[in-house]
Length: 237
Image 1: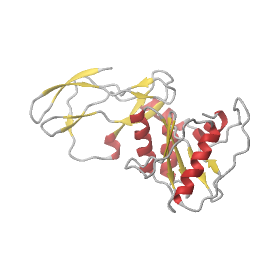
Image 2: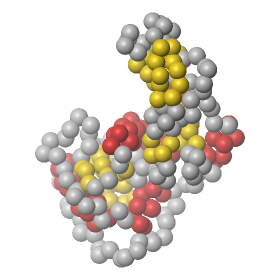
Image 3: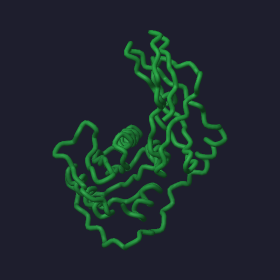
């Protein structure tokens, strides 16, 4: 883990900041490369562009968005830690070469029996249908809490968390990002199910973060709507 000295410009206190490490979808530990010697910036107003940085995985070369490194000083100041930028050409290539959603051939090692859906009449039914589907994909120990937690995680399984949006509005960008951060914090994968589909920006963000998206109709049969979901259906858990 990389460590850099940081001096708070508000109280002049010195800190040793250790950069956080997150798992890339390929499995390699990945961390934003810190820019040594650059001054830190107190955060007084947040914007999307300032809260995320582009990071290149040294293992597979993938470009993804990661949380901007920050440090909370005991004096109350929140400091943004400068990150060494990824080359603009590399970022552009990472975006431009990302394919649109094209269904992948089913390549599961062993054929699965036909999925038996659960008819959806209530929000609880939607969660139950998603749980059955995850079990069908091969996930073990799928469970759901008696009441929905503040994290909005509806299902947990070995190595996985899932969120089920049973509202009548398309699932938005914030839901995708919150699921991704919850998955990072738990070192597991995340999957989203929605009854009303997804907003365009939510689908784009999920593609960039490799989060599988499924949409369900009232018969309770999930359908993949992006490439990570197609891959999950193809390979199983």
